[in-house]
Image (cartoon, rainbow, N blue to C red):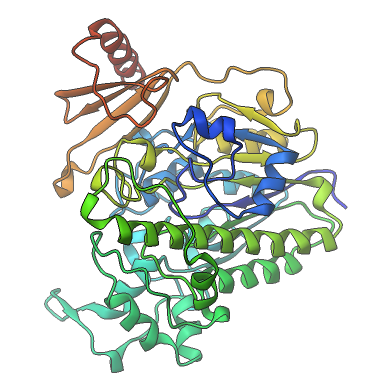
Length: 469
């Protein structure tokens, strides 16, 4: 047994922060009734540790958010503006710091640190991952990236062309697994029916349980754990592909949620309420399945006798609008997109605590490095949460920010800043929207015209943060 702690990070894709099993009082502060979620393992984790109710993504898009986490930097200097950019190999990661300090550093699932390549290696390994600090990796395809990687190919002139199903060639380990089990064409054909953010297809997948991606990658996580030396500290991040769209779930998962009632989206599409409730049932089903897989992985760690010396972290890269404001996906400055879950349990951490501290995703970087007994000076924008986790303080940041700039691909840049009571969104450099989060937690009413002093104060703080690099 090692003296240093282990780190198990559960990192689902697109899990919005107001869809975890909070108590009624927390839901009330969010303007919600209690949701009928079934996540018993996550609930136990919340009872054993600290739940941060005001955590936000550094940037609500896969590649930038994960780059911020890897580097400990805020969006404006993480050097990954959108999903069209790779993580820069010359930029330090906390994974490499852990490896330098004697850790086995593992990952299973979609890392999205080389997202635009659409190639993962058939065993989930490419040389760049070693340069980023990993020792063990099975990096698999995200849901849509997997499909794009096999149905589209460039011809000799560089033009994209659609491939025939007889020519599908896996470029990652998950689709290879499907191909080896004669399920690849079945899976691609199913996804072809689901393209488009406005597509609310909630039909179950034809895949069997063993081939459902989150179940398959959980088996990889357990296999990887068994390869870690028992006398050496380890870090493992499990990057689930759910609950990211499309709303594909197995027949078993679908049946378990039929008829379960959910609130309709905030300012959603009144003409599609029935479809949207089915989507929400599927979203909850994906969360329940992730929770089930969490239980399997925790059981494996308990068998290794390491649970008492392991920090268990649950978070996500960003949220999912889930029909709010008639919108799906992420990339928006609103709560459904920006708010993320964050739960941490482990040695010396206070139990059953809810913290409303203002936390940003990249704060996990310094938290892990801190508990590993290491130093990462490059993580300039990351503040360790240790003082809150051990009950020594309640205040973390005075302001939290998030941002996204996709102007290069025709989408307006925006930035947001919040002091926990008020939230300012600056879009395109010239449009300001202000929300009172205490009185209007859904961010339905812009109060900027009536509150110029509050607006200008937050704007000044936002500009100060950016002017300091």
